[in-house]
Amino acid sequence: MLKHSTYPIYKHVMRSWLYGVLMLNANETLGNNIDLEVHAVATLLHGLGWDTTEESSIISADRRFEVDGAFAARDFIQQHQDGRFWHERSVQLVWDAIALHTERSISYFKELDVQVVSKGIAMDFSGPGYGVSGGDYAAIAKAFPKGDLEDSVNDTIIWLCDTKPRTTYDTWMQPFGERYVDKYDAKGKQRIDLIFENLTTG
Image 1 (cartoon, rainbow, N blue to C red):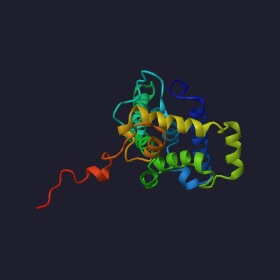
Image 2: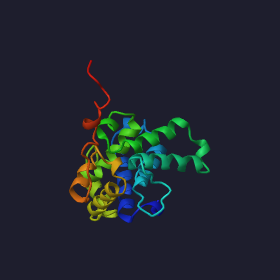
Image 3: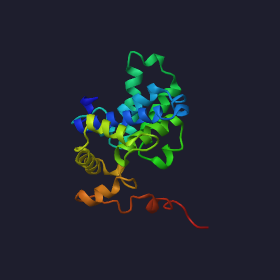
C-alpha cells in the first residue's frame, strides 16, 4: 500500500478502516450484513487514486482520482492469487465504494457495504459518530496520529488540480484549484455552462 501512497495517507486509510470496524461492532444488524472482506479491501485501497509518484501506473489523465482508485483496486483483486474466489458482485461493491466515497449524497444511500466505507472515511474528518465512542476514536487517532493529514490532503488535491484540472472542474475539488493553483480556470467548463450548449429552442 505504501508503494502508491504517502505515510500520512497510509495512516488515514488505516484509521478509516478501523473506524468502520468500530461502527460494525456497535451495530449488530449492520455487522451481520456487511462483507468484512469487501469493507477492508475497499477502505484500505481507497487512497490509490492519490498516487503522486512519477510514471504512476494508476493515475489517468482523464478520470477523477476516485475512479482511478476504483479501477486500481479492481485490478488488484483480479490479479491477486485469491481473486478467483471473489464474486463479481463483491468486486463491484469495492469499485462502487471507492468511486463514490467522496460523494456522500450518493454513497450514503447505496448498499450498506458502500455506506460503511464512505462513513468510516468521513469519520476521519468529522469526528466520532455512528455508534463509535469518543474514547475508541481517540485511541485509534493515538495509534495512527493525524496531525499531518491536513497538509497531505491539501497538497494532494492541489496536485490534482494542477496536473489534471479537467477532472476537478465542477467537483468539491474545484475550490482548491481556484484558491491555490495559478492559471486554474473553470470558467465555461462547468455543467451549468455546458448543459444547454447543444439544445435549441423551437
